[in-house]
Image (cartoon, rainbow, N blue to C red; front, side):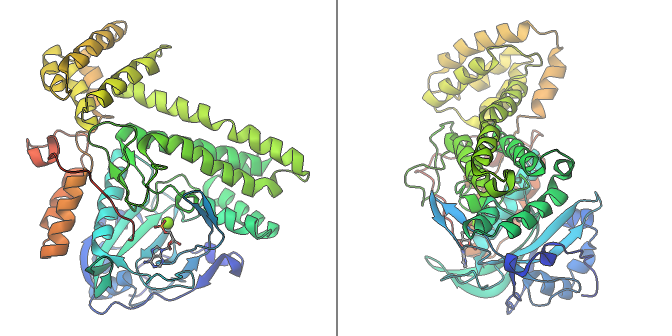
Length: 491
Ligand code: AMP
Ligand code: MG
């Protein structure tokens, strides 16, 4: 493929200890499963060229496109609380960066394209199921307005990968503001490489937080802004019922995007203790723990930045603590603003969070579906006859009725016209999220029957999450009742 991807690489210009140069491993029979044509165009890549055999060869890692400088990046990370000094891209290869139509720089990475010096005992490969899961969920998150990495393409490799069973191999071409993680800072901090740490921080400021460059204390400003962005993204997760599943510090993006979709899932019935990941035995990464874990991870980031925050160790600790101490407030402000919008409240009142918490407590006691309850409120805010559909979501419908009295009294104090309120609520309360049974149906058809139609249908519906779809119960109704759902890592 000749110059079809306008690469403009910067990470590879950083010191050589930041990465290892490595070529993707060839795939025997690459086949295109899905190409995100709109995203390609946003990145100024011609989608028709990407869909040619040469383009597919590049997406599968068989050909290194002109201008690409493939590397695997180095990072460390706390995995379930335990520090691992050397992780790195073990199954992903960064081809390079492109500047999109919006002027923003983005990474183009192949996930599942073979072994790297960071692979340890892994095969560097990805199975088709997790590739499709990441494609669906990351694109759904983008459509929901949650900052996220994006899926540019999925290809099957024609190779078999071995997990619990033999599975078709695949590669995901992924796009991100960058793949720099909290763990990337930890990598250099743990090695005491202060100059590399500074080079990384300067790169991140120039690339993601240019406003920090002009601050009196740029590295402090960097920390403050990263904390602010993380507070925002985690609050958005909670507001749509998303559970990342493996919030290790190596899976937390410095640019504030949702990254590394592994055992992630959306909640059906509301329960803050919900955990789907089979490897999260103690519920460390449960839905309701996510803000506390983000805070913990950011504290690890602040520790890593200490040598840059002040010449004097004690002064640096004070600065780090000051900034880290701002996380709970930043999270709460973002979350409460989101909750108000979900409930249709335009004005601010002191007890708005209490009103929301009362609803959530009732939802959890009555196993009410998260997405359907909030979507149902959009109609109920306009017309109380719509309560009929809502109250049946609660084991004890009277629990909803009691809350609705309190909610309507609060709505009544506001002057907003009912139709305008309903419309505003429909823009923040999705009708559709990538529920587990939908994602599983798409994966099962593709993996077991080479049928990609379900994947296409699910993806298409997920692209319009705020529209009431056709009354297809598989998509828009309650999920089928089943035994406890489990998700697995091992992309
Ligand atoms: P994760 O938490 O799933 O994002 O991955 C944690 C670490 O394990 C990263 O360094 C990955 O690159 C590495 N890893 C996961 N799966 C594989 C694999 N199949 N082959 C090589 N490395 C892997
Ligand atoms: Mg990861």
